[in-house]
Length: 396
Image 1 (cartoon, rainbow, N blue to C red):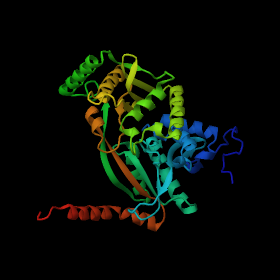
Image 2: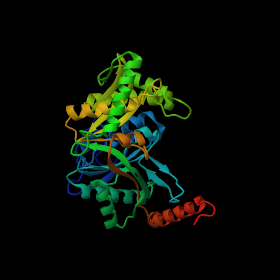
Image 3: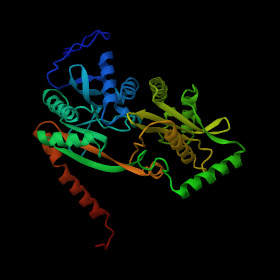
Image 4: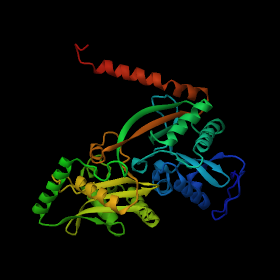
């Protein structure tokens, strides 16, 4: 059955929906129509919290290259044909806590899912998040949609999560914060102009001079955004280090990741939102970093360092110069590292902090909502048990 407003012809124009109220619906990403992708992109531009990882340039591309994203379903809040909110349900997990099937916004490979903050139009935040929650509840009742959903990595001190908690409470849908950690950022109103301590700057400068002396070449930063060879060079550099060994995640080890990355680069370069900076020894790049503009800020995406120069701190050299360049040549208000927990490199280089959390929403029936409501008690019990078993013999 074709949902209202859809047509089997991929070139069809949108058919107007009911404009009288905000509604929600689910779109299988494999059946996404061109006008729906355009509406999705327009929502991303209007989002109160930008999140490129939930834009077509990440998710739609990933669904064509990776099995882990191929079954993604987009829950959309809309007014007529204008998208006002979006949460992608990428897959179904079966965690130990809660002991119920759980829809997840994060897929594999995880490099596609840097942040999982839902896209919400800045002009109607509460209305859009409310419609999304209503959509989750309706889908759990009417289809095979999970009654518990996890938002894996959301910006906890932002307006979207605040609205999700507020709208969940008003609807009797429990929202549990399962884990929280800090990630590194810099802001134009804060420490971006001078992000590093004097001692760290001096140490980076000392290593830069040492590298120039040892190599006999000039050390400098090059903008390689529009260099056709940049993507291939990045893949080679990344594979030279620990990511290319053992269970490492270097993209060059997987032909699907290589194909996705080349298409990804072309997409964002054409959009005018990608910056690729390289640390060069003479004409040779020995470290590279990708930055993606979104809304009023810039997200750090990938960084790679040539394993042949382990003692110089290439990543620090490149990121210090990159922050200086981006501060002077863009009007961005912040840089966000959007990293995993405990990434000491970015925590040291980007000294300001934002909170990242995993939210679990109980949107289904009584069992699902009860399981999420019980999660605080279960978490305390697990923590207490862990303390007992890790206590040293003879300790108090």
